[in-house]
Image 1 (cartoon, helix red, strand yellow):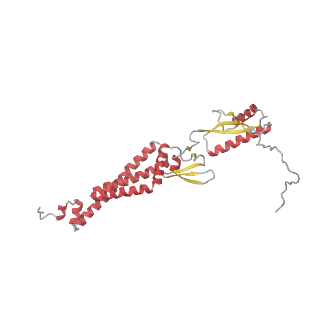
Image 2 (cartoon, rainbow, N blue to C red):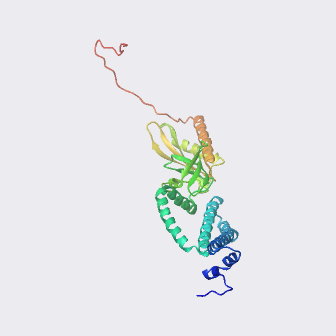
Image 3 (cartoon, rainbow, N blue to C red):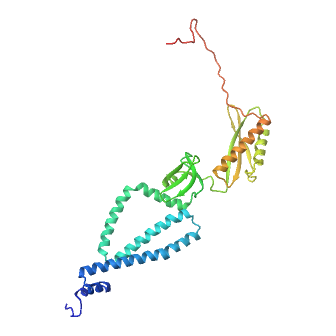
Amino acid sequence: MTIGAGSSPLQATGLGPIGNALDDAGLTATQAGTAEGAIKFAVALVAIWLLGRLLVLPLLTRAMNRRELDKHAQNPLLMLSRFGIAFIGFAIAFGFAGYGNFLVSMAGIAAAGALAIGFAMQDVIANFVAGVFIYTDKPFRIGDWIEWDDGTYSGTVEDISLRVTRVRTFDNELLTVPNSSLTDGVLKNPVDANKLRLKFVFGIGYDDDIERATEIIVDEAERHTDIMDDPAPSVRLTELGDSDVGLQSRFWISNPSRADFVRTRGEYVTAVKRRFDEEGIDIPYPVRTLEGGLNLESGQSVVQPAE
């Protein structure tokens, strides 16, 4: 093929307008092609990034607000969206700049790297997946009082991320808990509903009046301002111990928290104990009686000589 006198050799290599302009400026064919690809890559990447920041992220934020998604859940989702926009921007920019072969090579390297990283970061990935389930299932929220590991750990949720959850214990200790620990076992959320039932067993003596003790337990529950009238408090005989009769009181408090639970139960038990003392109802403690004798042979002593 013969190139006309007014044509540049670089134009025959498939350079675009930018490459031709750089060729006219005096760059070589290789330099013009490299510079054109870099400029296309940068322009496409910036365009996709701005489109995502100015259009996609605001729309996503509005959608999450309409669904009344918690703020602590929005931040990680927005962060993942930014990573997604950046990834898409790089992919489109590579194609727009004509780096197809390079992109294929990088995809192979990335796949091998992802496989190696996946084996090395199994626990991290498990916690990440568990964090996604926590966001979608919402077993608890920030501010909730939770218990897990058969009640071994408990506290108030302070922060939820995609990898860990931070819980403040009632001794003011901060626990950083992997999310998988909260999704693999039984999790107790006593404050998920708007009321909480509490139970306490009062032990009275076998000679005391059960009916009168029951009346006192119910009466003190009805007197307490933080104990609900509906459902009404109730008492059941649940235990016949070695030294006492167990009367289990069941009562409800509304809008519970750990502080309310401890305070209300303490005040209520104290009031019942005071009434028991006033009316002569005994709260016995275990008594052990030892029977038998000690036989000594003639001439033996129970006192051992000092060595």
